[in-house]
Length: 448
Image 1 (cartoon, rainbow, N blue to C red):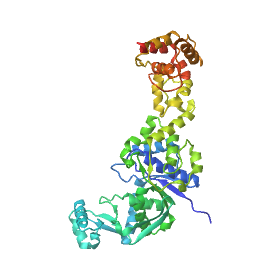
Image 2 (cartoon, rainbow, N blue to C red; image 1 turned 180 degrees about the vertical axis):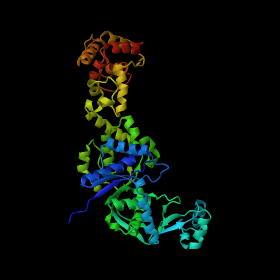
Image 3 (spheres, rainbow, N blue to C red; image 1 turned 45 degrees about the horizontal axis):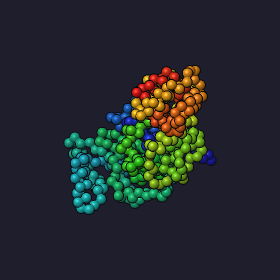
Image 4 (tube, rainbow, N blue to C red; image 1 turned 180 degrees about the horizontal axis):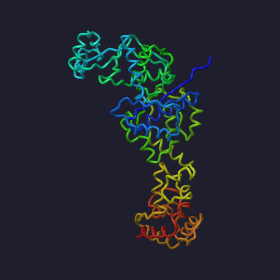
């Protein structure tokens, strides 16, 4: 007998651009699948026709490819509405899906009443008592029912691959709405039907879905499937540097924004792959991350996404990139010599623009108070061209002999005058790129 095919899936809704939270889930699903020879599915949860767009769907695929991820199958929930209707009818026949007519105002009033009585604000299942005549009267009056799933009693448990043993007490949860009044099936329902039909074996998602997992295991059983066929791994939530939910910053941490800022895909995948583990992230290829992947390395505690830490990792990645890997994204005219000179001083590739202005533009350095005489001497000793890699040493040695300066007192005024910055790339490599004409003009301005 052949072993069953393992399958994992990443199921974003195409209602916006991917952010680092989405990317982490996509990456972990991909790494697990490739590590275990499983198939990796991309499923677009696009039943929300009002908010889902093809533009976002295409952007999701583009972002995943940019990260280096690929997948074996693509599914769209919008193409499976007939299947959801079929599954819903089966649940209705089994008495597990029942119609409801309460308005939001009525439900809110009931919740408030239960809270005043010190009762849990759980749906009271009043609509289960609805007679056929009462339902007919409601529909004759223009009301259309939405449909709730009748949860079983007791508790549902599973051995989570990250969190360990978990249990959800179903009586503490309101019967979930699976079908809206307009007939639209909701996530809780569609996800279970899709996982069942597509043969998903492992569901890897965020810890915020733990309660959903209890509900969906009950729903799987109601659809005639064995809940034990699914394994679950819930990754702890991502927090920001202050310990707040990262969701509040998703707009600023979209992959599109990070890509525009010059964050490298290797930095993102290397960082997210180890986020939530005890190990420090280091630059790594996807092949290396796949070979290293293991759920046992993840902590059950929330993970903190630190942009400063990812920027530091991005700096290390940039230092490893050769000129052909970045040439198309550098300012027009940038050379390999320029890239080699500046790559060790960039947190983000976008910062190369500033250094290109330094070597090829017309920056105006600050006037350096009290350094006029020194800078005038620097101008007088500035070597004639042509310049090579030794010009910086020749010039500063001559200036040292003339002024008696050394160390910071010698180098800092020169750096400020030539670049407008008090730190940056090694001037041994930068000065020949700046050239004598620009260097002389900047010394004159800074000495004024």
